[in-house]
Amino acid sequence: MKDDYIAQFRQRTPSGDAEQSWKSASGKAFEDIVLQEFAAQCEGLKGLWIAQWRATPASLKEPLSERLWVRGEIQSVTAESNVDFVAYELDTSNTPKRIIAVYSCKVSLRERFQQDLFWAERLRGRGIRFCFITLDNDGVLTEATAEGKLTSKQASMSVAMYDRIYLFCNESEIQHYTRIFRTVNRLGEDLKRWLELD
Image (cartoon, one colour):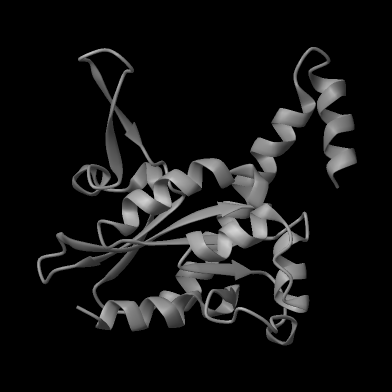
């Protein structure tokens, strides 16, 4: 599929960056699939709302951002986390009440690992769960769940960094670190539990 996309892209736009275009298109398609999973699994959970970053209310973006200082300067900048999905609770008047969890959604761990490392620590300090949803194209996480080996830096750091890691696999494939690793069909189950916690 990737090779076909790149070949067609190069025919249409010979001077364009076919690899970057593929990453953008496949990433958007993956986010659409995850959004459908959220919709199907969270239907009927009263008071819960899931939004993509671009549709997240401005009042929620502030606690999901960080004021950073330019080195050696008295000037600051605001860096937004740009997480892919935000799950939040609404009050009785449909106003955002609290952020329950945020989700980084990538086809492999390496695509956003360093950035997520920074944000996971910042948001956890604010009581916000930080989760990762992935196809695990590199197989790093799938190997860790099947064999229990945390030999790669990415796998070992990820089990400490994320509150949950959701994989597109069968339940039977997750043999180790089951407190962190879940199949994607358990997104709604975890959100329901977290929604009930105060």
